[in-house]
Amino acid sequence: MRKKIDSNSFIITAHKTAQGHNISDVCHVLKIPRSTFYKNSNNHVSIQKKRRKRFRKLIKEIYFASGCRYGSPKIAKKLQHCGEKVSEKFIGNLMHELGLYSIIRKKYTWHPKQQKIEERENIIDRDFSTKTINQKWATDITYIPCAMVGCIFHQFLTCIRKKLFHGTVV
Image (cartoon, rainbow, N blue to C red; front, side, top):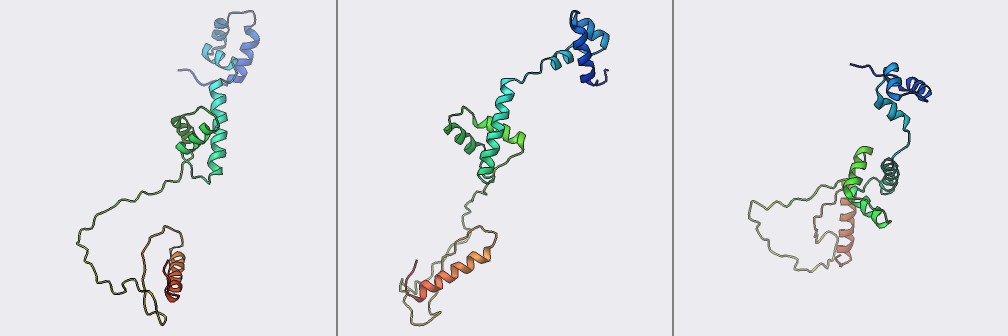
């Protein structure tokens, strides 16, 4: 089995001696494969590599401009809107190579109640007028995902108190 060779020194020597000689003979004397010689002698970058490099740059710009939220579908649509011909899969592959991932929101799954819901008597009957503070309370529980849950809950209750005290409901 051949050892990996330092291609720079041998390839430079091979190029110098190959002029006017058979390339197969030069590679045989230097004990390097012809494929290594041809791979390093043809140093131009392919059109596909240039295209992938350009789109990597564009993807990074759009991804970081979106606050790391966009995934391949949105980035592909944005590039298509700009006139680029790209597919969602191509953008997804490049994002995977770059290690970029979108923020994925957890989908809500509905679970039917196992118990029968009992109805309560409507005491207020939409009459929210009050004569004193804390006479009537009404609420609607809405779950808002947030890092500071207590902050939103406090603001919600403050809003309800003000509206109930002044006799209006949101």
